[in-house]
Every structure is written in structure tokens, then in C-alpha cells.
Image 1 (cartoon, one colour):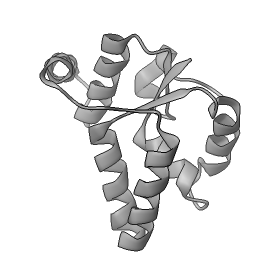
Image 2: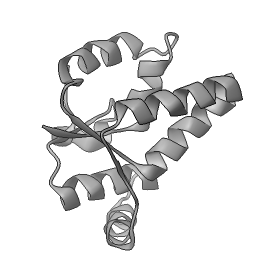
Image 3: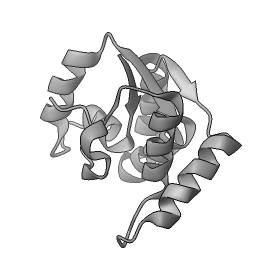
Length: 129
């Protein structure tokens, strides 16, 4: 399977204190042999969150481990960005994330099998543990 990684999954996987850490570990044990993709802006977003919460030493370690984990880094190009903006601008819910819309656009554009995330935004695209 070709799976996309979301920030909340990555951060939960890396942080033992995260409420979803145990779920992330269980899910990762089931999918670690699959082909794992990450959108570059998700890599940037999640590494920034780790930096803000825990400092640069952990952010650097997180970034290194993320690059070891991922089989394919997908760059947000103009095609995906255009699709993401269409999805984003069609939303009505307050607090909608552009990055979530970019992930959904990436899933559809590359016809990936699902996303590793705890976010309900992805509904049927989310891989459950």
C-alpha cells in the first residue's frame, strides 16, 4: 500500500507524552513495511511543532528520523496546490487547515491508498489501527 503521513500521526509517534502515542505505535507496527509518503509542507509543519514544543535538539532528531522513515517526499507543486486551494475554499468549518486540504489533494492526485492520521477531516481515507 502507498500511504501518506500526517503531522498528528508523526508527532504522536515521536512523543511518548502525546495522548495518541500508543495508538500511533500500534498503527506503525502494522504499516511500517508499506510505502510511506509525506508532503514537504507536512514535514515542515511537524518539525516546526516539535521545535516549538521541545526545542531544536529534538526537532533535528525528529527531522532525521522522519527522513529515514519516509520512502517518498512529495513536493507541493502547482497542481496539488491548486487542488488544495479548491478544497480549502469549499470548506465552511471554522479552523480548516490548508495543510489538511493539501494532504487530501495529494491523496487524490497520486491515488494513494490512505493517510495515517487521527484527524477526522480525512474520514474514509484514514487508516485505522
